[in-house]
Image 1 (cartoon, rainbow, N blue to C red):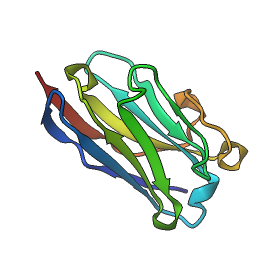
Image 2: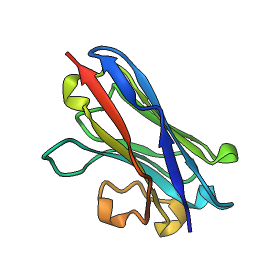
Image 3: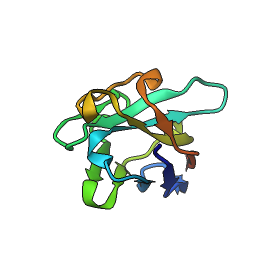
Length: 127
């Protein structure tokens, strides 16, 4: 069982930056690929970014490519999402998720392939 706790959300003006953090419980964090998803009011949850268990492979949604950076520190059981040049359309609840498939070797964009989810953190970008 893995528990995930996100933090770092808040209110920021367009063009600003935020850094989200997700801390995981457990001793085999490197066996899990990690992903960030988001859900805006009235919309379906969508993929944002993913990173493999080793951190050697990352993948981004086109909408955030070049603005967001996902990283991880396996010694601290932490995954980060650095968000720069934020836009009002980035407003959503952001969730981190853990995927145990392939011992952390894949970077899936499908939310149904993730096994554990955090409670979410709100990000609001004002225009």
